[in-house]
Length: 322
Image (cartoon, rainbow, N blue to C red; front, top):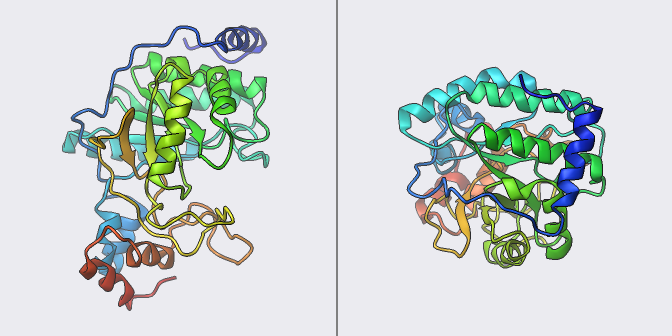
C-alpha cells in the first residue's frame, strides 16, 4: 500500500526535503533518452483535426513527437491508448503531470495535498510497467505561491514516480523568471536529487541557447542534473515584453531529438503541444489547452526550420480555421 500524504508523512517528507537544501546525495543518472525513440501520438488533437479536415499542411505538427498532458483523473483512461502506441512504436512516452493544488497560484488543480498524492499514485498505476519520462508540474517551483508545503508535495511525487522506475524531470521555469541560484534552491527542496533532471522553457518561447545557458548554471548547483528543453514554440525570438499568452508572432522551434549534442541536455522536446491555446488572453481566444488551427497555422507558416513548401502550404490553407 502506498502511503498517503497524511500529516505525519507530510512532516517527515518536509524534513527530509529541507535537509537536502545544501546539496545532499543525488541519485545516479539513468539517461533514458539516449538511443530512445520518441512517441508520435496519432490520437493528438492536431492529428484528429488534420484527418477530419484533410489538412496536410498540419503534418509538421501532427507527425512530430509531443508530450501527453495529464491535468486530472479524467484524463487517465485515455493514457492506455498512448501506452499501446508507445509499445507498438518501441518508443519512450513523455507525459506531463499538471495538477498540483493551487495550480498557477489561481486555485486550480487538485483539491488538496491528499487528492494530489492520490492522483500521482493513479498515474503510476495507469503507466503500469511502461517506463515513461515524466515532466513534473510546469511552473510549480518557479511560481510565487511556492512554499514548504508545495515543496514537500512535489518531493513526494518525485519519490513515488522514481521508485516506480519512471524518469522524472522536475520543471524549473525559464531564464526570464528566476535566477539560477534561487531556482536551484527551490529544486532541491522539491526533490530534484531523486529526479533524472529538470525541464526548461515549458510552454514558453525563450531561445534554446538562452535556455541552455541558464540551465547549465542551474545544473551546476544541483549535482550536474541533466535538462530537457521545450522547443515547441521558440522558433522566433521571444517577445520583448515577455508576453506569454498566445504570443504573436510565434513559430515552431527545433524538432524533438534525443541527440541534441548540447552539454547536459538529455533531449529537445515538444512539451507544449503546438497549436493548443494558452487561454482566452482577454481576446476571446480558445480556452487553455484547446487546439486552435489558426495558431497552428501561424506556428507552421513562420517556422524558420521548415522547408519553404511546408510554410507556403500553411499560409495558403483554406480549410476552416476555427
